[in-house]
Length: 327
Image (tube, rainbow, N blue to C red; front, side, top):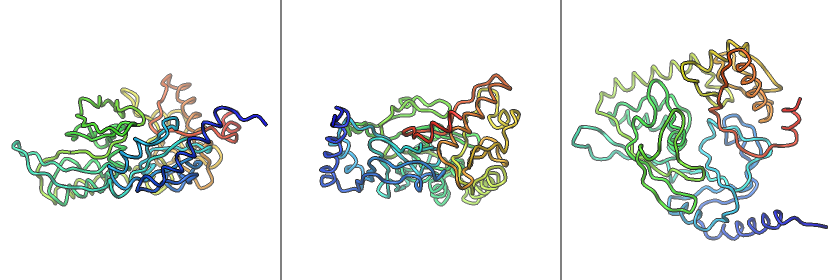
């Protein structure tokens, strides 16, 4: 029997990962299901999943890990489509050790700062700021996901983006080196930062301004009402599917192309908001991606505009996925 060099290298890397289990404090496991960790609730397993205890544990892991294995950072999977073949290499997911929040001393200009872990949920950060009378962060309550994900894609809602409130962020590079980054260094643009793949945010400092708790609560309540009225927030979805092209709203283009309610298998374009894809209960990742591509094709055909995915799609193409895409 002939064994390929690639297979030998993979076996060697997996053997070293098994040894690495004894050298880190966090949980390191192989062949871990990811569907139950993502909002779409679809997709194959991670070859390896590492949940570090804290930043020091993560640094050690990054320094010792086999470099030939790809590295991917998973938040709460709110804006992610994992393909049916699963994710090759190592998936890192930050846990409770990265979800802390603290109020920092007030600055001379009156601004209020909070330090938050990258695994802190955006909603929890908005609520924490409200409890301490810090305004300007209410928009985070309308963004599903974590601060780390918000930083990586410059997430925004209701007229504000993370770049508008970021003071600085801490990130580890793939070799485990720590970097302190300013908003200018992160090169924020619409739904994008310049942070390379494989880097991992661990914490950030955000700024707001003193405000009455009742006023902050009222603004957050209005955001919650607006989301519930306009978006399928209780469905198996991944948030906004496509970015808004300059001068246009993605949902209007999708609607004008006749795609509202369109289905492929168990995947559907939401009837409530045309820029949301839904898993109606039986969808595969292949069906969801194929539906998104069909929407893009129809929008291009009717408007001449090529929609760009906002949802991140990652993982191996499964044989069943190819059959759906080719049908």
